[in-house]
Length: 190
Image 1 (cartoon, rainbow, N blue to C red):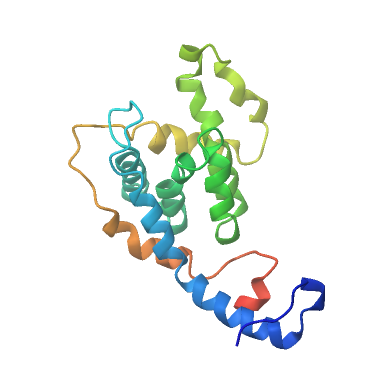
Image 2 (cartoon, rainbow, N blue to C red):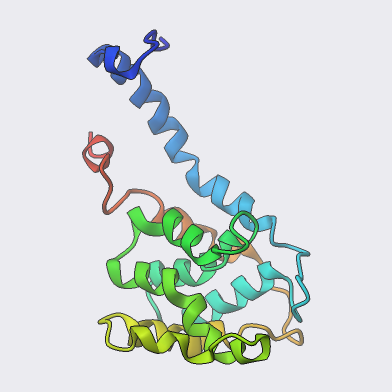
């Protein structure tokens, strides 16, 4: 059954029962859409020594090898997923995708990693390299600084063998299985 309202204010409980059935089916395919979008980064070098997909995979591999939990590793994998659609605010795009599924600490890390990473190159572009210092007293700043220093900054190694997204697929499916926070969270608990 398809909903029949022309204004949302005229919708009924029956309409929403039908809609939510469809939305739940759509939601279960979110990991597939995310993995497919990650493939768009394959071959996109943007002038970097490795393509955007390999950078993301190397970042996730470093985090995984260091013993970070699956949620953190998925954040490492997806931290630059916004590059294709949000070229001027890629970290915000990545954070918006991840937000319902991750901790506040990891969300802040993903959302602010670009400014923290900027210390390593902003000065080459005439941008204030210490821009990240505005956040130095934030409770999640050190978490983000560690992410950049230990994983993101080190993940441009063109001498490494090519990594596969398949390795991280189970983690992506696990993290995106159920939102931790969302205005619709109760709908997912039904």
